[in-house]
Length: 458
Image 1 (spheres, rainbow, N blue to C red):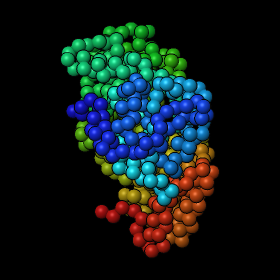
Image 2: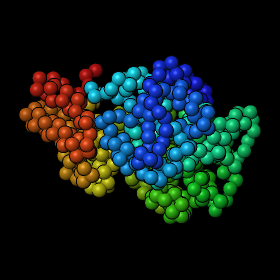
Image 3: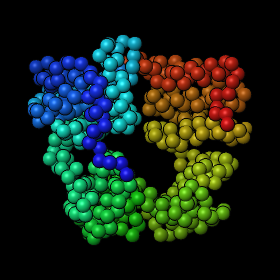
Image 4: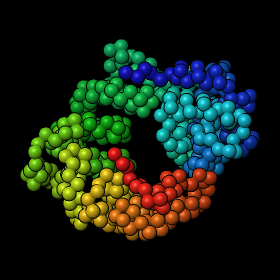
């Protein structure tokens, strides 16, 4: 079990590898949040404790477009500056490296990577908020608008957030405060990152508190946030499932997201009627399931759910990851595309339903007929894409690789060159120094020109 993260190890590491002697402050007189470029963490902690200030850390990369937008739009905002002044010490941590880095930045490389590792930084910007004694209070990934960022600042200094560590100690000591247990489960999952403990608290909370609430009392923002993060705690026998099934519009209005309630209903139905009966530890439990009977049973029990689509979606996952059959898998995808084609404006649906299966076939399947099917999926993804070059450049690369694996080398090279140019143009428009996927695309083009396989070789 992971121990409560008070970042002692990080503090020791960073304290032994200083960053420099820049002043640490946020100052409205400068017109922007004044970050310590590459902080001496020991000095930051000493100053934070002495002045009772919280610590904000922006983990960024030099090529990151959203990071630059944060600098331009958020850290220069007068309200943000006002919120941080006298309350926060702000520092920046550069997670990548570039030839333009100065001496102080280079000194901080090792410490920056320690932060990336310790806090599981998977993208940029990653926003970290600490108490004056160095305990992690909040962590967010990605660009946040001014209003959202200010909310994060306020949440970080909210006494309830700081008290979560004390509440966790009390819970471990056997004390149960069900009024705040939902928030505690969320805190442990997101900040402490102990999934086992978080799931245990969540189950305790659902079994001994939520299950006794009326459907009316369940429809609160806090409860919806809880179930949003602990979906396995939604059972078809629970009041919350009944609420989502019978009054999805009400739940969606509280959640602020249309379709959320029925999405969670479908997840619970799939888990109970498909996943649990047919799969255990990634292996099939039933030989040749009677999918029509399952579809009929689900349709009779839950008439408000599209049972055909539910079973079809499960079959696609089943034949790919549980009982591998490229033929049955591809037939299911073709059936879904025929009956439920992705809408052009639904960018993630296009990516998930077309590009990802096509890429999967390219990497792992050698059947020429299925490769031809995958090529059609790839070409359809390019045709219906309306989101922008960020997705398109990946679709172009997928098509190029499929063409190459089908033996159409000349066409493949032209297509991969197009993917590279699209990627460069995307970077220019975003103001990014680093071109996305450029190393991968160039390596693929080089293999094509040398007539080498571009797919994994076992």
